[in-house]
Length: 405
Image (cartoon, rainbow, N blue to C red):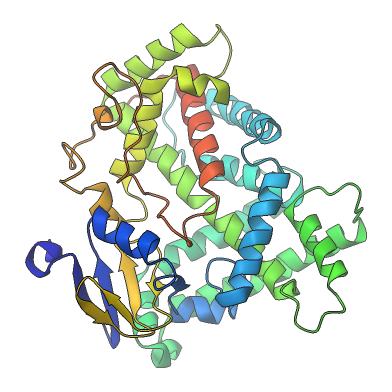
């Protein structure tokens, strides 16, 4: 609405923080793809700076960020991202989830925690080489701390801390976030130590093992990126990013199926034509299921679960679309404005899978579909998320019909 008054590049003030907002798909694409270097840094957000001390992937900068992103992408590929081995792990988790759903015998229940657990187990298998039982106390503690922080980081009191960090002593929420991080650090240090003791360079189990090997190789370098701090926060970044967004999108999908039972029926009819009786959908079936694929994309577009993206900043003065944006300015690429851009979507404010279908019912990609953002800082787990969304969502609809209680 502000962009209709002030244009697609405008300034807002969050307390003393001046923030430039980019609205509309064309503007966001121009900034993040055509001016990738100028808009390529992550913004300095006080609570994240305090939490991470500049470590990890999501909120690091410069050469450190490049090194960690390169290593992480390479390692994720090595441990199955986009490959059949990872698909098998996800399908095992889908089967465990189905058994849990069946235990309720059709009675209503809250799916939030169990979907979180199931999706988290996939990232656990990549990070640690193992999955956890849903009632494992170690697993539940890890999830509880991360989920509590995810909720608190969006709270008014933490936002107030981000506006005025000097008032941090007044914010109980920010103190709780930092206390949770301290507990997570202690918890993960113990796990890392176990992996160190059992480390076999010829039989790596996951991301943590690969990081520990690299750390050993670079131990004599004075300024290695492979520090304990980077191991800690890279692991947490992957865990947090690989859990909440995917499980929330699946829950949105189930909600939409309850609201639009005719869409649910069409997906199930499509699966009946494509998949053998008693079988679950596999990734190879995706190209034969254009309607299901369109619905999943529309769920992501409509649910719009990261509406403001993650803030960027300008490492130097930028000339952009007639404006001079000073060095160090925080930038919000307003992803919701692309996902609801009236120039690109026929009915942007309605749930409409035909946004992703041509006249013959074939699936079509839409360039304004950017829920994972675009450019250098786009979500590096996009490939994993797409695999999980298809296998979890279609697997659940293969076994169940979802209705309001």
